[in-house]
Length: 215
Image (cartoon, rainbow, N blue to C red; front, side, top):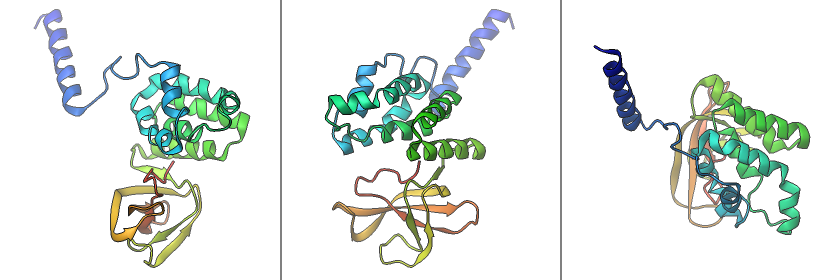
């Protein structure tokens, strides 16, 4: 096969695989991102709205990392400008950085933590390193203290009291407890996890906004 024809065939196969497997192609995500757009999504809005935009930030991949780094430096400016009403920022930005599996995201987190000593940044760093170590996205560290329950129900037996920062393997997400009302109304939802290390299994309640309880 001639070199040029061979190169074209390899490129075509790569494109087909990328489409089938959902791999992001260079320039596909985040190439047109602007600081203003990210600010509008993560800072200038209500708490629930800006919190639930954190997964969107993760979807943008490495392209959003420098913008998040700029925003973390502007935290006091936002607070002054908006009278402290910065939505879920900076927690949502830290959560996003912790879930972007690129060394640049870890670097931004570590630099921010060194300057701020923000406990959420420490958890995001721990979660990033856990996922890198386990080579998978289905892992995290607990954001807050919480009971590990035997079943997905508020009245179920507590298997273990967990502390913030506890590493877990996330086995199933958003398990609805029939007939149980959540912390802010609506159905109560739980995630099924396995404790690392130790191997105990159980269920952890999600908050009323149903956002992930794991960094």
